[in-house]
Image (cartoon, rainbow over all chains, first blue to last red; front, side, top):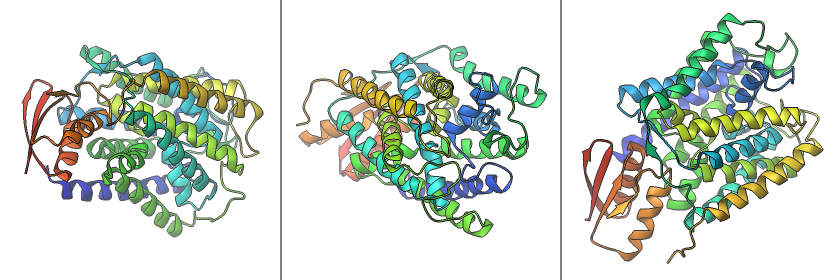
Length: 356
Length: 67
């Protein structure tokens, strides 16, 4: 393996992903939301009727594309390996509370990068919280935190999640009456690029992310843990490319106030992303990486995504998700409970050994 | 022999990092996915080790030798 080529590859992939992400906004996606794994899973949950927030209901083809893109390239490269059984319920719970944190901040780590690239300074506060959460997670990793090992599983077990994406695509295209779609001008759910564009963008990003192992939480975690910069370069390349594309397309607006689909409350932006960073370190990857791993046959990641789905549905059903008006009281309670639950998971899964 | 099979990211590298505190001339580590293989290779090379590996089914046996 050539380490230099590896860095060049992830920088080029990151640049391309940054441009694609910013262009999706030009093609119709909500502002600073070319991609958002949390928001898009939430929208899809709404389209399936798992929550009733009419403003955010749409089956997002980007998610489908990410999983299928990863799945196909993994099959081609003989990296599709059916695996699972590493503390699935714990992973579900972590996924659930990572989503509560994301919907406090209004974005996953991927959208956080895109928001910064669009000039949203609230996302810089989010980034500081994200790093703080990663630091807490790394503290436990260094002390032996583990969700135990995965095991080989039958192929059919790992085929279910990618197959479900095909079903979602059929539901999107055929649009039966039982699927909910946000009405025109009814909110972020109504803002989307054409299906083929969104799907194509998802496929390309899915393939690139699978090949480069791109991960937002991994980028910062590896620098802290090992002084290893590879994944961080991917993270930085997305930021730079999206920033430049936003400048060219006129989607850059610097400041804290009046940012699209964002809250200005610094404390809760910080705590929301702290929850996300902490939870994602324990999960071994950000929501984007979980989708890619699920495409590669990792059912622990598929379970994590189901946790994200459940978290999204409950967040809206229990009025925990923030809106442009700000965080909700229920959301604050949810984030505090999330931090406590993740802390309990971290402590109870950490072996009693000392780093010599 | 270190066994990092089935461990999710970044545990295989942490297992190696802890083992490397003892500064052995050679380590053998088992992993079962390409990402772990790449991560271990990167970490070992940065720390002055040469990496060779053999594959059987889904498992990779990695031999790290001090340069």
